[in-house]
Image 1 (cartoon, rainbow, N blue to C red):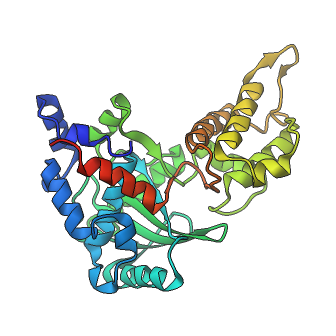
Image 2 (cartoon, rainbow, N blue to C red):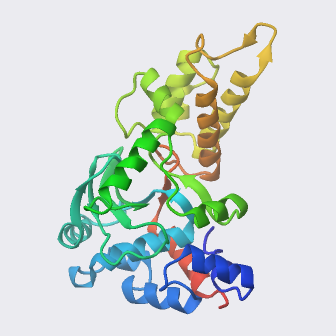
Image 3 (tube, rainbow, N blue to C red):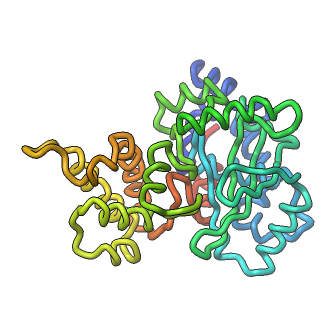
Length: 325
């Protein structure tokens, strides 16, 4: 995390060189490749690119933004949501105009369901044929949504794309796009396996069971509703949702998961007469871990997506740039 992936890319060890070849496209084999690519296409860092004039934008600008986010928080499957709240209205307008001008429209199963494709020239992660980009807003704050997809929605990619979508609908996760990246994420903590905004299979059923609607229901809506339904005690549910840090929210959610998994003399408690399943508890534990990793931030996350501020990614890029190799 935070630029540490440079250790792999800059390594001269045989196994690491094989891993780099298997994971990344041919233009991303050395630290020099990465540095030159980003410095040319990113106006040096994320903050600079997001405030750049329209003349500095093209499809590869969006590629570079994703790659910068990936350096900050590498994932096998995941969604980045870059906070645009620090931009002026006119600056956001420039980004949105570039989004409309340089990317092709396509439907999406994520959040607002309105996306655009940055597949032209996309060759960063082996096995991933498209970069999906969306403009999103959650609880009134604007975000740039970036997600690598295994298949595009063109003529060649539509059938495998639908197969993966059906698999995700049935099992909660899509098909593996890169076996090499999947295997690497399992054995190496520098890459997270999954960090996406689309609900886990069981969490989706939980949200529906709580009578909350839509793809943008936040964790801060789910947790109080869950505690209320199950009778799990908390001194102030309203304040928990409004002012608690994500770490505190995650701790409270983990306390619930432990209590709801403990078998007492009367069986398990806080399951709302069986409405809360073991699968839901499992998804909630994953979510609690993500919330605790957020630390003292107050983020209104949808699920396990990677939410970042531009300056956070910039710091990771700086670490990456000065790394050996």
